[in-house]
Image (cartoon, rainbow, N blue to C red):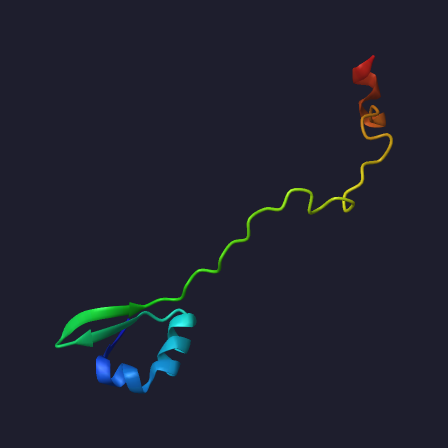
Length: 75
C-alpha cells in the first residue's frame, strides 16, 4: 500500500495510474487523512447474444447411436 499526498499525486498522476493498474494500492491523503483510493475499473461484461455461435457447432448424424463399448449393456 502506497500513501501519497494530494500535491504529490497531482504531479505524478500518470505514474500512479500505472501503479494502480499493475495491482498496487494507492491511497491519496490530505492532512494525514485518507482521501481517495486508486483502483482499476473492472472491464464491462458484454451481454450474451442469443444465436452468436450459430453454425459453429455441428453434431454428427450418429450422435445418439449406442456406443460399441456399451453394446453388451444395451441387450
